[in-house]
Length: 114
Image 1 (cartoon, rainbow, N blue to C red):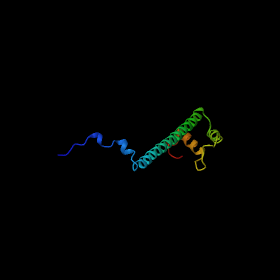
Image 2: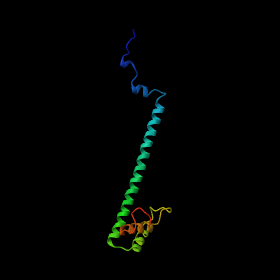
Image 3: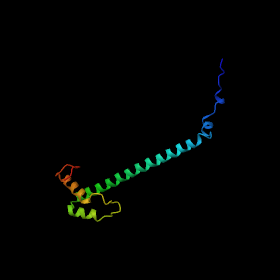
Image 4: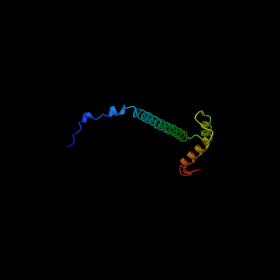
């Protein structure tokens, strides 16, 4: 007849965790998990911020259109703004403004190139 093992005679999770061979792997896993959380959070914040900036730009362009500002004046206003966030490879503001104005006048469907 086998003797039943007593639950307290087996090492606990914490005792197993702090054994010399397990500790470096556990520490590495925790560090990698924290790095992954930081990376995912940063990526999420970056895209959320870019989306909010885009929403503000679109709202500003629509406000100018609602005020009846001419296309040339809208282009001049937008291009005279700060270029701190613009990248050289980005399209010109005038392309977007012309598409928005033409879409609002019904000349082309939104999202399609003029």
